[in-house]
Amino acid sequence: MRRYGKHTDEDDIRSRPNRKGNRPRTNIRPKHEDAAEGMVLTVDRGRLTCLVDDRIVMAMKARELGRKAAVVGDRVALVGDMSGKKDTLARIVRIGERTSVLRRTADDDDPYERVVVANADQLAIVTALADPEPRPRLIDRCLVAAYDGGLEPLLVMTKSDLAAPDKLLELYGDLDIPYVVTSRDELENGDAADRVREYLAGRITAFVGHSGVGKTTLVNALVPQDRRRLTGHVNAVTGRGRHTTTSALALPLEGTDDWAIDTPGVRSFGLAHVDPSRVIHAFPDLEPGTVGCPRACSHDEPDCALDAWVAEGHADQARLYSLRRLLSTRERTDGD
Figure (tube, rainbow, N blue to C red):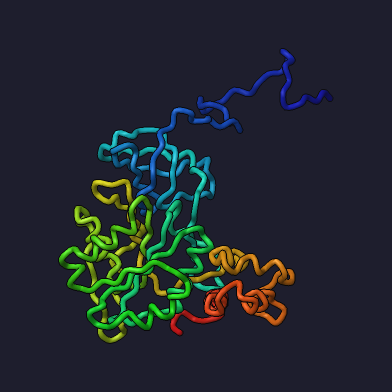
């Protein structure tokens, strides 16, 4: 019995005819060297809205990408019909390397990691000072996700006409986080948007916050030409707001190269995906002190070298407290 390898060139081998008349399957994939570059603006049930040059193009993920998913903010390569006309559809054939990733899980026991936004430079954490009450533990979790994902945090406090920001500022003052305080009147007359816009210059900023804090109202004020979404109202009984944004949406700030990404309101922010050892990178004054730490140090145990580092005057005790509070946030519930 004669055996032949996969690639034989003998002329006495007969190939079986293809009855369907289509091309035989191959492992060789096209390189798509002529693919156009674009940015994912939003994702809805398998359809991705992308910006290609100055056109809005609807696309779907190519089968060859397998389980790899594109998210808002991704830089992608597209082929197919990119005219942007109604009922046309392009294909995303490549997803570019990400510079940052904002990720979350449903809770701390959920192994399924959800990528919310890619390639953002900054995370604007929006919280109301009242109606609903601020949730510092949720803010802590957003900060950990920002530090872990490579985003710089910005704290935006709304509804200052209902409560003073002093207590919240005291809690986060030692973290040196830039912040903006706004009132409801300032949101309505545009002053709040003008002050927040100063912190968005030259950046792609993702906005995150739980429902009812005024996040989407603020984004709409920053991008007044977008009228797709309606703001909701806070439930007087539960103190929670209605979700007014159902999927992340990237919006360009008019007259600039800046972007604001509105994300759905969150009621929990799981950190099962976070490696605590990466959070220390957000504390450059403390990081050198970890050299003497035991292996796999949690930075909150008797042998941690950071205690001696702070005692020697290299960093402030309040900074170490802030680090340990953030690292322990996975052990506390969002409602604390």
